[in-house]
Length: 390
Ligand SMILES: *Cc1c(COP(=O)(O)O)cnc(C)c1O
Image 1 (tube, rainbow, N blue to C red):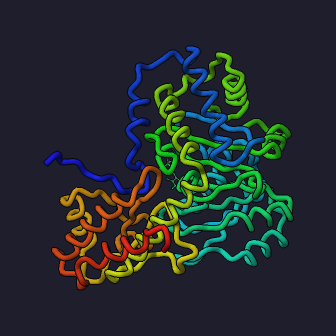
Image 2 (image 1 turned 180 degrees about the vertical axis):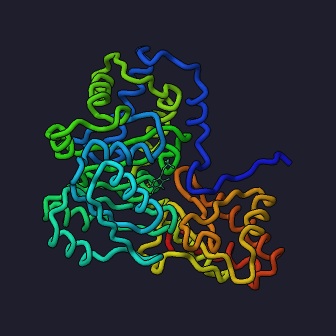
């Protein structure tokens, strides 16, 4: 008994041993040639993962929320109209961030488990002259997946900047930043990128950089200001030493290792692995009478699943039993239904074996808690569903 537990929350996730090894390397100077190379490589690899060959990447110490803050601080000025397309908790957070910079924000929120319709978005864009819109690709509070492509198209049509919160999607769901014409796609290191928490990662289009350059007012946030960070990113891209704020040296070395593994797997293959596993996992849940938050299969995320506790099963007891069975899951996050559901992360290094372990532990835990189902059904449905032919 090693007491080894499987961390299956929507970030931080289980990390690849190679990434953790890179993290444990002796800390270099931030201007050492080796480190400059790692930073430069990471910037280049980000463009491949984001599918944004002409984009401007930023790697800054902080969490995913800093990446959101950075997008808002640099692109929004007081009085700007911003449309927030929300599918849960993180949409609401983006509204709070835009509001902090004085934006005139409109929250367009989907009913629980649904997405906002394209008609509703277009109606808004037609009625008001917005400067920017934000979309959450996968809202980690609901497990709802939004298709960013048609929304990016609408943004282009109405000449609105498009900002994608990809914190729970980049490197797990399909993101084609340049092809879709998204102006900002941002994430944090600890989700599908698969690197321990601590890096805010953001890719800006050339159009976004132009809009930032032509601001009328200074960026009202010192740490997030691209005036401070752009010269640093450019220096590392050119493999030159520079300094603004000490970079998270070890995390960036780990990021390079992680991005190399992601691109070695190949984006299409990686995204497909997430799709196949997630679909089989949903089939398994359904086989033991568990219901997910997203209303439809097409809008269910492939990086995590939000699941209602069965009736007559105490949520806290289930999570605690799962922990005793060596699987760590997350509770609910969206305030209205927080105590009614739990979340399972399945992104990054996730394998079929991990999800079988989750389902095995879930079946045992639910049996202990007297949920009515046929034991073995979830495992069977998963095995059937994850076959390549399924
Ligand atoms: C986790 C998450 C965030 C916040 O990221 P932190 O790293 O926790 O600051 C924002 N948006 C989404 C969609 C997330 O999943």
